[in-house]
Image 1: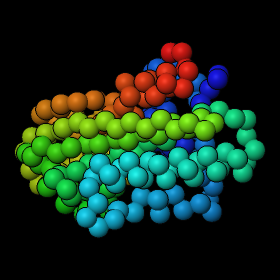
Image 2: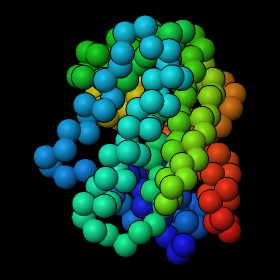
Image 3: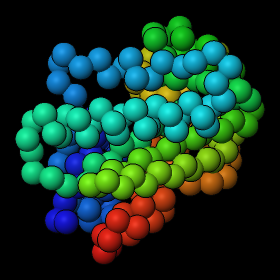
Length: 199
């Protein structure tokens, strides 16, 4: 195996694979695929269950995509990240006001960031999950407004990017920094070794 497919539009996940020296190619949905539909949250579904289920669905769709496009065979990696305050899931904000609502709720309170990965190769699927805790300092309305106006919260689970401007407000992290970014490298490396990849 000389490379893997990354079925994710996240540039951060691609950069993290580069950090491990893993050669990869993107395997993205076509315009007629409704990738967002896979991320629908079921009522009363626990955050960890949700993120693991969504990641499994993403891998299933990516493996079908690989077969339909008749591309060279290689392992396929998928991941999904969610932010949870208790059992409440904070997905990607729908608009600026939604982002502000999320950040007000997360301000000065610890919350979980859960990232699941799924790696498929031939008939084997390896799955793993990283769970970390993040605590924001108290953010004023003016600070929240300024952060949202930067545009960074859009498209990010929980309306923030730990590797971006939000770092100025993060008082404490416990767990995997790369997991909070969107791809836990320790778990990813373990999964790849299980499939026979030499790092």
